[in-house]
Figure 1 (spheres, rainbow, N blue to C red):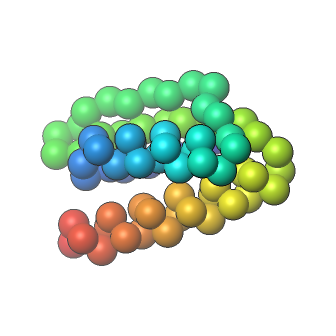
Figure 2: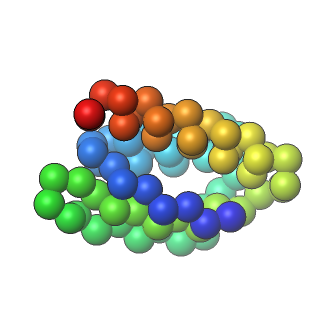
Length: 71
């Protein structure tokens, strides 16, 4: 599974890495670039289909919360 993120705070990437580990997934590739006030990240995750589904749901919630904070 590959996801792209626009992060307002680089510490959010640390939360994503921690969440990935807690849900028994891993990441194969991480690419993060600063783009003005945000960081654009592309991450390729690996894991079982069920673990990736849980990770995807948690990432969506985490990123939606971040968007609400930075409106």
